Structure formats: structure tokens, C-alpha cells
Image 1 (cartoon, rainbow, N blue to C red):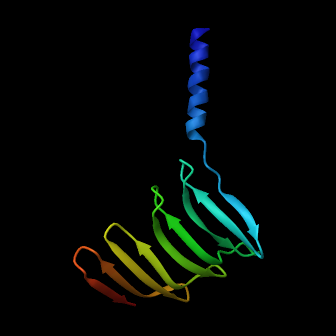
Image 2 (image 1 turned 120 degrees about the vertical axis):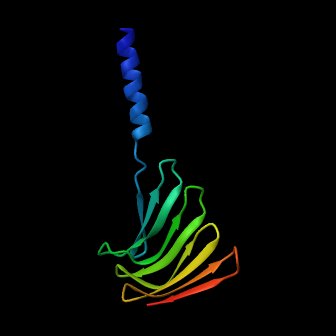
Image 3 (image 1 turned 120 degrees about the horizontal axis):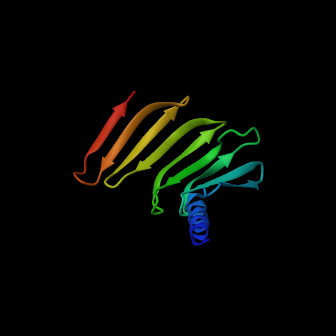
Length: 119
């Protein structure tokens, strides 16, 4: 009996830790706001879908500590305009044209260097 209780307790605790944090979706005007989460419940990514289910409008991504690591725009499922990507010591600005990278500019805090990449 004791072994059965221990086995049930282990299965229950494994189920609790294995639970997935499901995304949430809420209607906002003509768009649907989607929020995706890390296992601990903090926000991983947030953005919008149009009524056809395509990514549309502003999207933001966060690391596990809540710091913003990416931000950009979609138009009818296509990356468009300027996107920004943050890391520990740099900021990259990526310009998209027709869902393709047109050019990249990176600023580094370490050595005050700007790096340009043009496609």
C-alpha cells in the first residue's frame, strides 16, 4: 500500500511539472492578440493575427527574465520594415523588404562600433 501511495504521488508531481503553459488568444477589434508563455508563466512572445490567421501588426519577444529581445512588424504574414533584436551587448536593426533582409545595422555597447550589412 505504501509503495502504491508513493507511486501515485510521483505520477501526480511529474504531471504538475510537465504541464504546458498554453497560449492565450483574445479578440481586439479586427485582430486576435496571441500571448505565448515560458514554463514559469512569464510572457515569451506577444503579437497579433488577422482574421485569416496570418501574423499581422506588432510582435514582441522576451527572454525568460522579461527583457525585450525582439520587436517588429508583420503585414499579412510577411515581415516588413524595421525589426530590432537586443542581446547583452548589442542592438541589431534589421530592415525587411518583401519578407527578405534588405540590410542590417548593429550597434555594440562594448566598443561603440556600428556594423552594417547590406544585402
